[in-house]
Image (tube, rainbow, N blue to C red; front, side):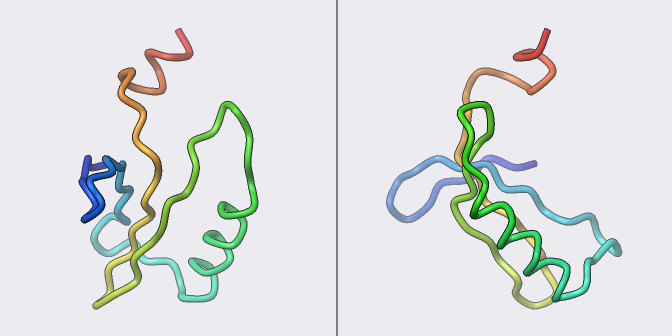
Length: 73
């Protein structure tokens, strides 16, 4: 997971598929549709995605309070 900044200045978390571990286009689209419909106070929101030149990335809102493990402990 990477930290990024959108042109609007919003800080985001970017989850990038590992090299060589690509989902098919249909599976990636299905995951995006599911994540865009799920809203819960304990889940980060999906901001966007990228599927370009073989790259698959999901863009989430950034939470600055450490790792998920830190939050759950």
